[in-house]
Amino acid sequence: MEKLTGLVAATFTPLTTEGEINLSVIGPYIDYLTEKQNVTKVFVNGTTGEGCSFTVDERKRLAAEWCLQGKGKLDQVIVHVGCMSIKDSQELAQHAASIGADGIAVISPSYFKPTNADALRMFLKEVGASAPDLPLYYYHIPSMTGVALEAGDVLNGIEKMIPSFKGVKYSGTDLRDLGHCVCYCQSHNWSVLYGVDEQLLGALVLGVHGAVGSTYNYLGCKVKQMLSAFDEGSMTQARDLQFKCMDVITFAKNLGFDVAVNKQVMSELSGLALGPPRLPLLPCSVSKAQTIAQKIKAFC
Image (cartoon, rainbow, N blue to C red):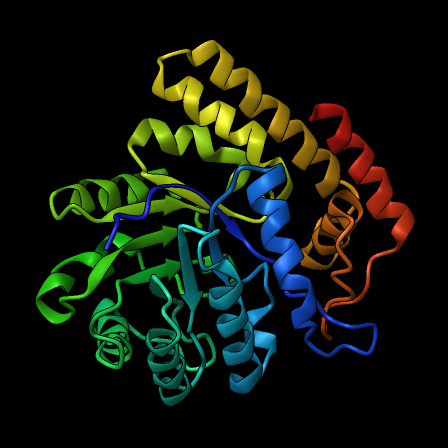
């Protein structure tokens, strides 16, 4: 399996106005990513996709459609299978393997939380064992799970427990812990994908192998320019592009930039009918989304 590197779009989940999943949008969505943003890798049913707000059956149907429609167009489809229930996570992992996904990612349970790194590694091991031939990535996102365990501690020795382990999606801001992860993963030829879009350049300096994020749905082209500039050693250009991304995201955050707002912004920019978020997230006003979309258009 090809190592996961580069830019990965964390996809939104299209819903009808009645709040049901809308699979018909996924084909055009893939065309938009590949043709307009030059993004050919996706991370499905994660935070941006409101994955934990959907039933196991809904998540299966979404993952299957992304894999089906992505054949020949997408390079990699990573499916997030993390749930509060280990049985649900195992079922989703087995399903991801059956539909031809390229990898699975798992967050920590967040109601009954693992008390230490051993407990979380055991949870990941049992999920991974349900799809032993699929690369497994630990999805570290303490701001959402409330699990403050250091990712570096979770990785320590994990290769002895999970032969299919291939890396971490790091959506945190602790650069010391991130550096620990990069160092450990490099020695095993694993991937570290960074998940805080407005700080990507700092993570690149530490040696991450790519990024997974929501803004790459519509800023993909610009961020790919930043990645190229960094790879070529053009740090002034890379910083300039990162600062512009920061400016856009700061502007959006000052207006209240949550998943619901971001989803509506994507609808405005792409022309795709992504619909509302699912409760408890509240819909975003079109006018707010249009204001943010105008700012992004000026950058792009």
